[in-house]
Length: 578
Ligand SMILES: [Zn+2]
Ligand SMILES: [Zn+2]
Image 1 (cartoon, protein in one colour):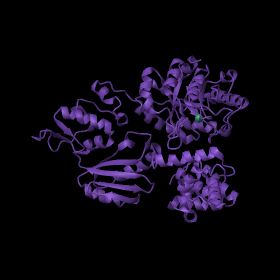
Image 2: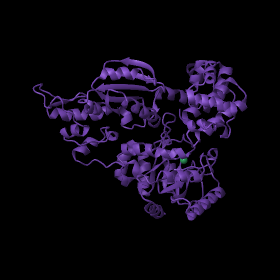
Image 3: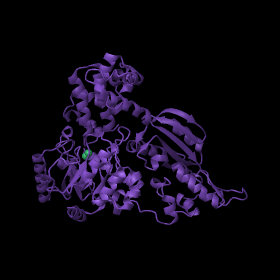
Image 4: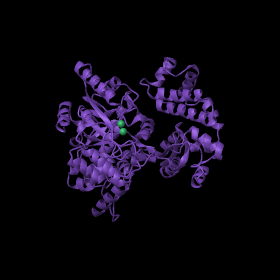
C-alpha cells in the first residue's frame, strides 16, 4: 500500500465519522493524519519498519496502531465496521463532487435522503435550496455533481491507472508460459482518462496463462473467461481485458488492440489495396489463394507498417488525426521525450498552498537532474489558497535571490508568480510589482461561470498585459470532476501567438490543460508550449511525465516546448520577452 491509498482511507474514516456526528476532535485527527501522510517524503513501509510512525506530527499512539494494521494487512476492521454502520446509499452520496460528511449528515437528518436518487428528487423539487445553509447555488452544484457521476461513470485518470497497470504487467510477465506482454488500448495511447485496461500477452499455451491469470489475488471478480481471453475486475475497481495470442499473432494483435479504431480502419483499407486482409491475427490474401507470408512469420509492428508503405507511428498519435498522411510522406514529428525536460516554472511552496518548502522543492528538482525551477505561488486574491501579498512576495524574491547567489544549489531558481486574472481581466498586482519578477503565469481561479464572450475577453486582456509571460491551465478543467469553463480557445491561442506569450500545458494528471487535441494545429500556427507541473508537493514534480505524454499526443517536439531549453537559453528567452 502506498501513502496515497493510506491517506484516502484515513480521509474517508474522517468523513464517515462526520456523517455519524462523532466528536469533531476525533474527526479532525483523521483528516490531519491523512494530510500528514500525503506529504511524507519517506516510504511509509520503511517508517513502519523503523517504528517511527509516532514521530510524524499529528499521529498519536492509537492512530499509529491503526495505520500499521492498514499498511501491513491492507485492511482495518475498525474501518470496515464503521462502513457497515452507515446506510450504503449514504456512502454513494460521497461520490457526488462537493458533498462532504457534514452536508450528507444534514441531508439525512432533515430530508431523510439516503441515496443519490433521493438526492436528485429533492433537488428537482427545490427542497435542498430551502434547507438552512444550502441555498440555490449549492443545490445547483449538487445537481451538476449528480449528472457528472452519471456521465463520467467509472473512469480513471491515466496517471492513477498507471499506478495499477505497471505492477500488474510485471506480475504477468513473470508467469511461466508468458513470452511477451504489453499494454494496449487507450491506456497505451496515453489518453488522459481510461475506462479499462487492455493487456495482450504472447504464449504457446494461452489457456494455461488464462487459468493462471484468473487465480491471482489481485482479482476481485472474474467477469468472463474463454480459452484466450478473460475479463476481470481488479481489487482497485478497474476492469482488465486480458488476451493471449501466439507469438506469430502478437504484433498484429498489438496494432489491433492499441487502436484507435479510426486508425485501424484506415490501415485496413490500405492493406486491401495491396490485396491483403489485415486483422488481429495477421495478413491473409483476399482471394484466399496461397498465403503471402509463411506460417512462422513473426513481423514486428514496424515491419507490418512497412508492408503497408508506412513507418512506425508511436501509439500516442494513432488517432487518425493526420499521422497516416504524415507517415506516407515520411514527415512524422520527432516527439518530445521525458529526458528533454530541463526544468519547471510552475511550483507552489508552503508560502501559499503548497505542502513543501521552497528549499525542499528546489532540492527535489535538483534530484531530477533539472537545470532550473521556477517558484510561482498564488497572488493575494486567491486567499483560499493562501495567496501572497506584496510584502510576502518581495520577501520571497529576496530569499530566492540570496539562495541563487549563495550557490548552495546546483540549479537556478527563477522567481515567478501565479497571478490571478481578476474578473475584469486585470492582473492581481500592479505593474510596479510584476516587473520585478522573472516571469508571471496568469491564471483564472474565480468567476468560472462567465459567458464565453466575457471569459474570452478576460483571458485576452490578461494575455495583453506586458508582464504576463505564461497562461496557466487555460480552461480550468479538472478531469472527471469539473468541466472546462466556456472560452473561445481559438481566439485565446491567436492572442498568445500575436503577443508572443507562452501557453502552459499543465501536467497535473487531473488537468492536462490545454487539451492535447488543440496543440497540433496551434503549434503549426506558432504557439509556444511550456510543460508545467503545478506542483504542491515535491512528489508532484514527477507529473511532468504525464505532461510529456499528452504533449506527444499533441505532436509536440522538443523545439516547441520552452522548458526543454538549457538554463542560459531559458534566461535569455524570458529576458527577451520583456
Ligand atoms: Zn492555478
Ligand atoms: Zn498553480
